[in-house]
Amino acid sequence: MKAVITILLYFLLCSHNLSYCQVNHNLVSNPSFEIHFGCPTNQGQLWKAVPWFNPSYRTPDYFHPCATDLLMTTPSNSAGFQKPRTGIAYSGIFIEGYWKEYICCELNDTLKPNINYCLGIYVSMGNAFYSLDKLGILLTNDSIVRPTDPAAALSYYTPQVENPTGVCISDSLNWVKIAGTFTAMGGEKFITIGVFADDIDITYCELTPWLWPRTYYYIDDVFLYECTDTLSIADAGADTGICMGDSVLLGTTEFPDYYYTWTGPGITNDTLGKIWVSPLVNTTYYLVQKDFAFNETIDSITITVTNCEPTAYAGNDTAICLGDSVRIGSSAFHDYQYSWINSVNDTVHGGLIWVRPAETSTWHLIQTDRFGYLSYDSILIEVDDCFKPLTIPNVFTPNNDGLNDQFKIENPGKYPYRITIYSRWGFPVFTGNESSVWDGKFQHKELAEGVLFYLIKVWINPDKELVYNGIIHIIR
Image (cartoon, rainbow, N blue to C red; front, side):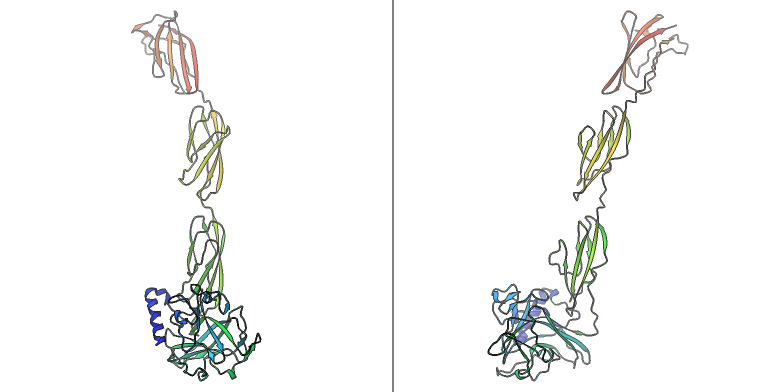
C-alpha cells in the first residue's frame, strides 16, 4: 500500500509540472531525488522523494535543504557532510547488523527480455565506524517485501549489480560509482538499493573502534538504460563574436533527462541546455553537463565582443566666409552624449550643430555612446573674409541713347548696401539700395551736367561694414 500511495503522489506532481516527468533514456524515476512531496521534517521520510519508498520495516532517509529539521538538510546533516552530486538532494541508508535499510521505486517502463542494460548508482559514506562491501542494486518484477522477522535478511535476492566482494567503500569525501551491465529476463519493473547479503558474507572495514559494525551511505544519481543508447558529451557551441549590446545563444542540445549547469559572468544557477547571454566584454562561459547516466563532461565557449557602435565623426574639414554658418557633426543618437570644444574653449552640446566661427578654428568632438565608451574626432574650419569689392562707375550719360543711361553698381558679393547721392552743395538727390538704379533725375527732372558725390555703406556680414565714397560725372 505504501508503494501505491507513493507512486500516486509522483503522478500527482507530474500532472502539475510535466518537466518533472520528462524522460528519455534513464528508466529510473526521480533519479537524483530532486522531486519531493513536502520537505523532510524528521528521519525516515524517503517517501517524500516521490516515487521512492521504503520496501522494508526500516527508516531510510531523505535529505533536502528545505527540511525543517536541520538534521535532514544538505550538505550538512545527521549523517555527516556531503554536497549532492547532482541538484540539491539525496537519500541515505543505515546498516548495522540485521538493521539494513533499503530504498525502492517503480521504473518508468518494464524491462525487455534479452536486452543488455547499464545500471548504476553513486554512493558516499557518511559518519560511520565501519565501511563495507556488498552494496547492490536489485531489479525485480514486483516490489520486494521484507519479512516481518527483523533478523531476516534479503540474502535470498541476487542483485544484478553489486560492489565487488572485499572492496569496502570508505570514501566520505567523494562520490563512488557502483555500476555494471546485465541482461534482463523481461518484466522487471522495480529497482531496490541496499545490502543483499547475510552478515557472515559481508566484509566490514573498521575505521574507528566500535562494539559492532555500523555504517551509513548517502545515495544519489541512480541510472538504468539500454546499453545501446547513445550518450552525448557537452557541447557549448563554437566560439563566436557579437556586437556589444547583442545577445547570443549558448549550447547546442537540451535533452529532457540531461542536467546542465552554466557558469560565467552574469549567470546564476542556469540549468537549461541552451541559454541567451549578452556580455559587454570578451567572456568565456563553461558548461557542465551530466547525461542520463550521470557522466559529467565539460565544454566552454568564448564570446568576443566588439563595439560596433559608430565612432565620433565631426565631418570633413571645410572653409567658409566670415559671417557664414556651417553645420558640423554627422549623427545625433538620443542615447549618446556629445560635447564640442573649439580652439578658443567654447563648449557646445549636440550631435549635429550649427556654428559661425569668427576666425579659423578647430572643433573637437567628444562622443559617449550608449555603453559609456568615448571616441574622438575633430574638424578644421577655415574662415576667410571672402570680400568681393563693388565696382562703382565715375561717369554715366543719361541721354536716352540706350548706352550708359543709368548709374549701375556691380555687386559680385551680392552684399546689402545703402547709397546716397549728393549735389555739389551737399543736397541729397537720390537714395537707394542694392536693388536700385539711378537714371540721373531728381523729382522726375533731369539734372544738369556736372559733378555729384556718392556715399555707400556696405554690410559684408552682420559684424562688418564698409563705406565707399567718391564723385560721379553726369555727361549728356
